[in-house]
Length: 120
Image 1 (cartoon, helix red, strand yellow):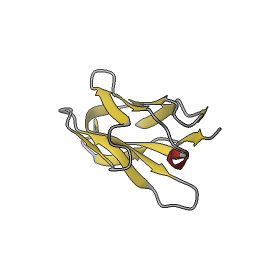
Image 2 (tube, rainbow, N blue to C red):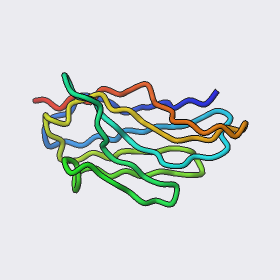
Image 3 (cartoon, rainbow, N blue to C red):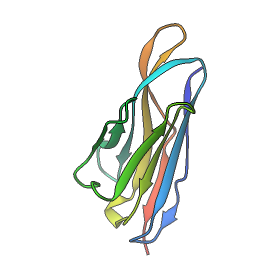
């Protein structure tokens, strides 16, 4: 079955950097948009960044200039490079991808979630 597996969550000091990675595996025919969302304590899940198969990116205003999303279409991976981290970036980060499986079914998949904590 298709699944997304994340890695890279950690505790980091304010001003620090961290890289999240997400790999899609299984019977994949094609992947459209991929992205990262986050859910902070007591908050709703929100969009962080997305990237199309062609490399077009979109960012939340709160992370523009600090976060960079990238993907490797050959490896079915998407990364999120986070810099100048702030305590308000603390959240569980979720990878998301719109995937067509080999049966031709298109749906959204989610990773398991990665805890990012920004604290001194």
